Length: 119
Image (cartoon, rainbow, N blue to C red; front, side):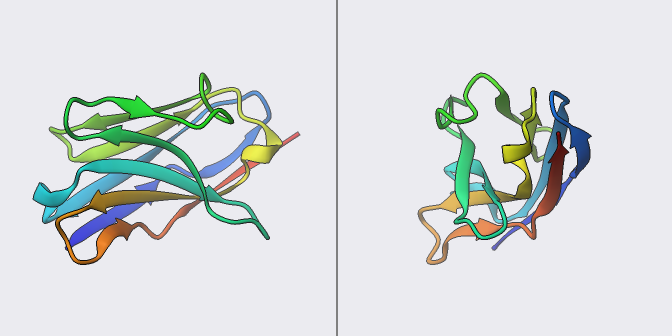
């Protein structure tokens, strides 16, 4: 199993920045990528970026590209989400995800951390 614990959420004004962190532990040998998702009230969970373990490449949806940066620190077993130029629409609960294709569960989720952006 993989354990994920997010931290760093909070409240920020529009235009500001915030960095979330995800501490990763457990059986990480099966993790192929780490992703960040968010869920606003009344909306479906939305993917906002991923970093791949093989090579370290990253991918983002158009909605956050050039504003969000996903990075990993293998020495500290953490994955971060740096969010810049935040907008009120970025408000939501942010979740860390580990994709584990060789694990029967397929993936793991953290408990989430709240981000609130005020105008």
